[in-house]
Image 1 (tube, one colour):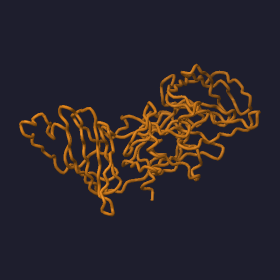
Image 2 (cartoon, helix red, strand yellow):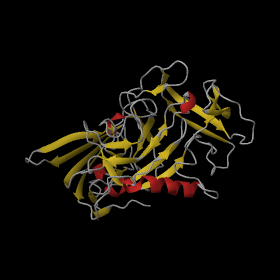
Image 3 (cartoon, one colour):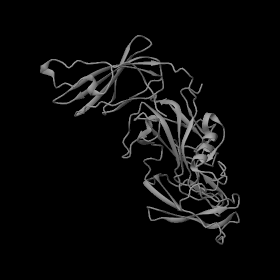
Image 4 (cartoon, helix red, strand yellow):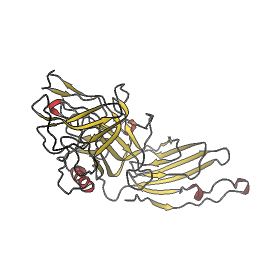
Length: 393
């Protein structure tokens, strides 16, 4: 799927006088002077010339007639997206002692011809970690492949279908996208993620976002974590890695401390923190917990591991409470709690530095906790949908 922009004209800059012959022409710069794009569609801009530093400044006429002018990026590349129709003026300055460049662009933003959906329209990847709801949500049938299970996950989530998928234990993930770009409106919640959390039944998932910088319509650009309330918690582990091993479904089960645990050593895992353990099998789910459509003998996941949130309130393993974190995680609060919103401005890079994104095209959600809670089983994030709050009505 290739993203298309409508270009009104490819401006031609005549190379200036001979005394300025080193100044690059507009064609050499790789940017046009005028673009026409639908609202809520990313327009990646990539100048061919480099410099010591960059400034992108955006101006537009406000409703009252005033003109806003703001510095929107200091990186070489910039992705423009606007949520409102109008004419925008963008100025790029490349600061270089030999060939300084200033280039002006006009971007006309028009209303889309077909109304956008506020919901997920595509699932690109569905790779759950092992878990008690895996092979059930969605249902695995013999002969299913990665593609057919991806399609089943899409059928559950796309266009507000109202079904749920399970991501399994720590690291299991889904990657989804939309038919438009979700615009970053600073100070506002930009989208929400629905799950099946209950009061005392929180299974937090970490949310990541990406911009279609290369314009190919695929989630193959850089990912940024939305730093929730536990991002700076000392107990949070960055660069965590876990490997799950395919279980022997015919081995003799080892009884657990509870009659609800049918095999305490069902599925082995190891991690990069010198940890090892087992995911138990519980009586409520008798199917294989390992994704049956994947042929590998082991699965490895990596990311940020959140602190354990399950607490045995009874002291004897009979009553567990899965506590919610303050904010910033999927499947963390009930859908009707008013606490399932996310801000794009929470995005950070791999080093934890805040990044400024004008909008996002893809989301990735993965289970953020590696914890088993007795007869309840492993902590596994479930996802029921993602909604753009700016066009949700």
